Image 1 (cartoon, rainbow, N blue to C red):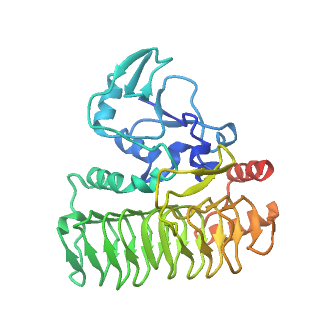
Image 2: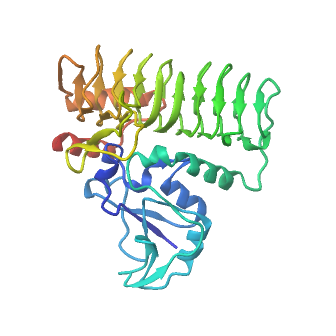
Length: 378
């Protein structure tokens, strides 16, 4: 079985995170969704039905695929139902299509564990708690954790803490009464950190000294996080290494938040928040009361940056200076509240490669072409 993850017309719904990736490559819980499909179907080829400018890095397939709604989080019941699909059938859950073969003209009703469906950008942090719990059970089933050091204080059930090979946890307070805690390969929780689950740390990620984690937090691979975090998803290779609060937030890849960056996640009047929509190209009222910053890939902010509730930052933008930036800052912007200019494309590529070089990586030609497309369209 080969799987093609269909953006399902939601490409701009999840921007700015999806300006540089398909919907099926978004991280929520422990995995990106394509990683999750690969975990369940280890022999399957995973391809994408996405925007043309992304297809060089995220290729599509022509035929012999099961087309899957990329915003659906798979579970074992869904995998089983897909195996039983025949040619020209479409699997439906209420009004949402889950998977189809061919044109999908014949409807099959899905029966099984209710699937989690990500329909709005902020669902990535709102539903992260439930997805982290499911992913923890999936990845730890039938396996034994590495031994936890006696220097730690555990509140709750220690069996809900899982350490992979090379994971290091010393002198931390770990509370599993609110959810499980997963520490991936070569990940580290440094001394003095206080963690309330659920927490999912991917390989080579770290919680810095004295970090406070309030739960439903995901650290993608190679993310370094300090200060105070609550209900945040980091995609990969991003840093918030110092003090400052970040809550109900989404951080892309290769981002850096300067020391003492703070983000509001609640309006002073406790009302529903408004946030910028890439679909309508204006602020839209949402159905949620809590929302922090959403930052696209390769963006950064300087020390003491202050973000208003529900701020949206595009791709490869560099924010610095005093005061609150605008609630929407476009891609490839350089500057602060008082003045800002367009970030020169060659300089943006140079600065991204400087950061990536610290991990022994650099932008591929396909990734540069994606960034050039975004630059030209802004």
